Length: 386
Image (cartoon, rainbow, N blue to C red; front, side):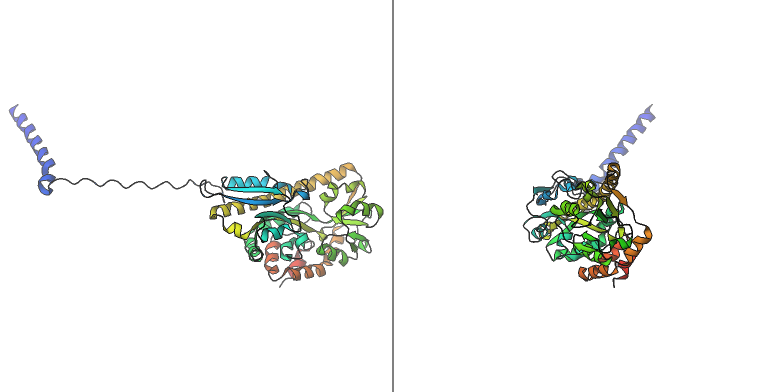
């Protein structure tokens, strides 16, 4: 028993000596340094490309909504207050970028210039009416370059949002004070509405054809037609009275106007297809003033709304084709591929002239667009760039 007590005492004494050793050697023990504060956690990734941070500076851009173009127009309606584009901007900016959308501040012929000189921050603009000033933007005006019917929207949209295309067009538009955010390519104008059936190339000879814009006029002349300028307000009367034999437009435009009530035929020639594109623009200074993440959010909103346009156009084409067939008043004429090929071969002159007007950046724009285009004149277009 005594031996066990002695052993316990010895063990306890050893433990006391070990615990006191640091004090005996180094004096009083120093306090351990306080741990460094943990870094603030990084914002959780959204997983959505182009989405801005949830907090940060806010901004408001005034948007000119061309409601005068008609809310029935599928190329205008997505940009209304609360529309698809508005939704994308709000979502991708996490509510930090607001659009003050106002109706008809500027019309079709002035909206692009109003954005360029800063009278308004953003606007949509129809391209053909301003292609004399900005011909490069109407690369879709090359006759038959892009596919017609349901292909148009997908091909043009894919070309416009290609990063290389955005870079080239940015060089062109910044000098004019604006940046292209996105757009929508209306169905190609390849349908001849009227009371004359155009089923063969020879049917164009001497035919009085209402055209819109230089590209259409040049194309109609190339096949022997007689182009005429008739205002939209006079179109129905001109067709009824025979002032014009046919009007070159797209399928849905004629159906929306009720042309199937006065036209026996609508002849579809894909080699004439010129896309009536509408672009969404932002003033360059207003864009540059935005924080980087809001710039990215705005451009992604433009990209998504542009790609949506392909589905919209496909649905419109299919719906109006079905509507025309159901009414049974107008016969849809599909010319033989051999006749379309003959007409496409005659487009080289108009195509060459249009490319020259597009300027020195035309080859870059056309090469990029050609990766998506499938129209009957695609190869002719490529053969005429340097």
